[in-house]
Length: 132
Image (cartoon, rainbow, N blue to C red; front, side, top):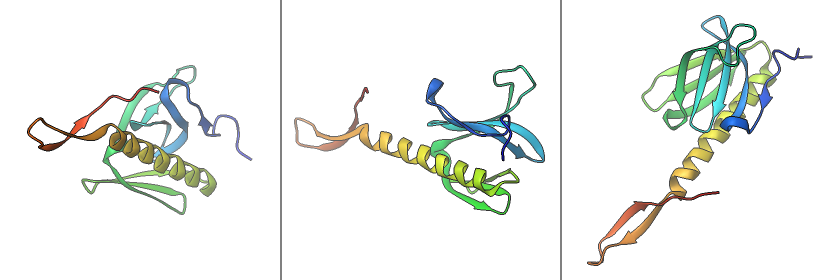
């Protein structure tokens, strides 16, 4: 059974997809996932977020894997980030949410591009705005 402070939280407020506590380099950090990135904070009691200790842009993620007590996030540049928790179920949930955020970002980028033609019939990709 997870205590209320450790239990991850799912929210659509403020663009937050998922948040909760994970260990980073053996230090407990408050981790926040948005469609744009993963951010981790040193959070003191009573603080909303605290001071940011690191972040990773969702667009830079190439893969997400879970191992025993470890979540590994690899970037397109070959850098790996490691997050830890004693419960595999929590890490599997984080993996699923990060993969979802990465997929949403890719779908948004693809949806924002459309092939158009110039007056001289040259084809090019143009960015369009899509509002929901």
